[in-house]
Image (tube, rainbow, N blue to C red; front, side, top):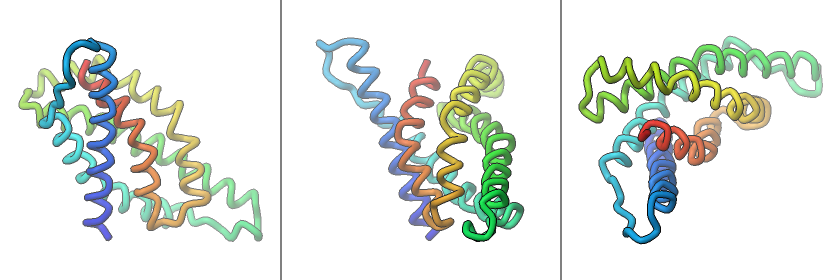
Length: 172
């Protein structure tokens, strides 16, 4: 299952980058033919494949730390456990994951630490705030209704659009 998660997440990460590139091409010029930056897409595929096992283990960790009671026993306890999972995800994983993304992309592009620090200084905070506008609701649905084995694929599917956004952000 981990290999399947990695391949799926990688392919969907690449799809998000391809979507971003096609949008960028349309907004830049309608007269020039689309020029696909395959290296950029490969970087997104690689990042997605690396993240999948980490996310899977993270979700298992959250399951252990904040077990969900049966929904029919106590809706309040259920909602509280979901809220704790979302809070942990957004206060721990999201900030680290976004920083990791910019550092990894910078390294895969062949740039040094000085460039990574500059990129983080410019892009980290706005990207994190954009994350907070999207992902808490997605993760609430994910943690409340999606079985554990499907949580990474669920997020991968949503991430097509998120990856398009961060691909565009990273390319600025």
